[in-house]
Image (cartoon, rainbow, N blue to C red; front, top):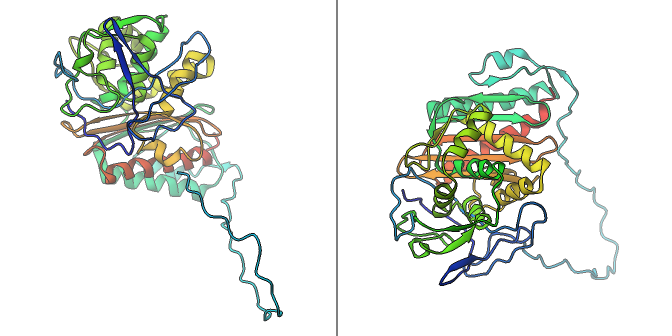
Length: 385
């Protein structure tokens, strides 16, 4: 399936190939992704058991459409004049205008107003204490409005990684997974102990009518890349060809065993590369990815790849100025599927899954994700335990 592209600036990957293979020039996580499409990207090494990395892609559709031989500000403000014009006579006496500063919401641990939770269609875990009940009520009412507006077309799942507090709506509803499945798949093969320097020959290409910059195409069939390069392309660029060749190399069983051990209820079968999944299942997977990132250098590398996504107009666009956000989006114009899953490194980190049935990548759809992310950011601050 074709993914509609709205990248403000594409990640450029120079693919130089010798007759026996090719090299994907990797992504430098210290440099911004937004650059001219032709600008080369260089990478700094990631030390550890995990080898270096490359950039990776985003976009997805239901499988079965792959075709061999094809490809599935900082503005400088001029400083104010340093020297004031000399004053020759005393200015008239004036009363300065009062400076208005926004008073922060006062946070004092109080028992939660249970009536706010009872009146909401959203499910909350056992919340006992909040920092401010009026603030909590305002956030819950905003979620209630979201649910009223979208109903069965939206599902979300949130969990605080410190307190374990969880908030869910339609969390067991199954949506097309789109590209949100790519990072859990990569986690499953990393868990299985693959060598990131494994050579992988490209045997299939995902057909895209308009291939995106940096994505592998039918022209890459027969070339060889490392597992690390394909993982980087699959995660940061959401490159479908990179992802399906990882699946062709390592299979579906390793992924299905991984999700089963997590207690998740989604799997890959037959010739499919994408499968329906629920917000609750993705929450389990991305919590596990977060924990790997806290324990190992390889996990940290995987989470950093997600921070440098070539497409970032949803959760990361809303919260990325406050703290790092590792995210993976999914989009499919044919099924009107549009999702984002994020590990948000707030003072108390949380995982947020938002899955929707809406026209992908429009301004209105992006705004919905951004508004929802801000609500959960506020809830994450106001809920104490």
